[in-house]
Image (tube, rainbow, N blue to C red; front, side, top):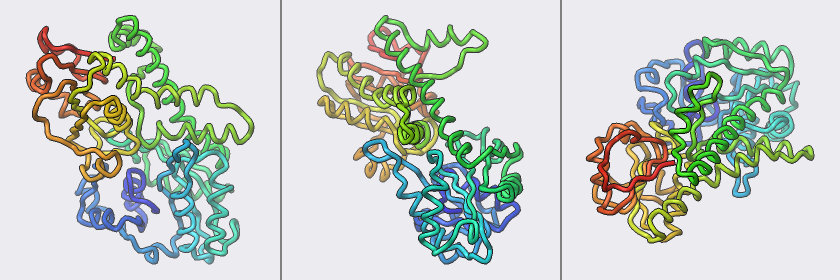
Length: 415
């Protein structure tokens, strides 16, 4: 297993129920933490991690040499221009190329999100070049897109259908057998590696587009003096209404994968209008919210407290959090912005966003409920109101405190 993050670790633990698994990660600190039974992502508890006795955790590439199957689960982000950044993936591919024993003719499976054709056109050649190998003769390729939803304790890796695809029928059969051990939901053999790559890209692009629609509707009805949450309550009574909600769309999947699909479209001369329109709306949502709140405060800068920094509720994952964009825009508008988050790592928050996490104390001119962590959902109205200065504003981005009475003197704003 190349990469022991949100994707690699749960899968490694699941496979270790039957196979001897080497979990490799270049982050020595991450490996040492896992060896003590601590998973900072919160995906695997101590008991399950300790019980995975057939899982060897290492940052030593030598320990991963000569395996029969290599699963690559490294990040595939975008660069500053929102173009696919394949450096982590190709770096992992080159590392695997040096680990391969040609006599074993292992299978290399990419789990990371990529555009159609990437596994065969980019990863395969990188492996060949690194190890002086020939694909087909010395190793073979497969693809099985990850479907991990951080923080989701229902749709875990052992309970979701695993899409698989091999470069030939023998590889596909091998992947069906191996991944069949990891999930009780079974596997689905896609028609080709490219089809499986495209399926992964559109899964998250579809969600992105639906959320973008809700964000645009929130902007429309907001100008009409209507709460989007009241609109959704009414519309949700129709049997086939899709229950998507507006908000800040971050994270490593929904906020990134559509750009991989757009890249593939542009490469063949197609303009991806719907895909990029959805991305444009969602990427701009944090700035739109910041500007509306600045107007709400009469265009006057003040002290702001943002509740929540992770990209979604009840997870410590800070990757691509649009709350960071919200904080930056408010700072640019002149506000003094503080951020609190009970789950985020303070060192990572400082490194990624330049933000110091603060405790829930003092009073602020503007308090923003940005991420609906359980800790914030459970706060009593008096505790929330105590954070707001006299004449201040309480902004609720996710309907955190709908129906709660904060008294007539507190100014409230919501999508």
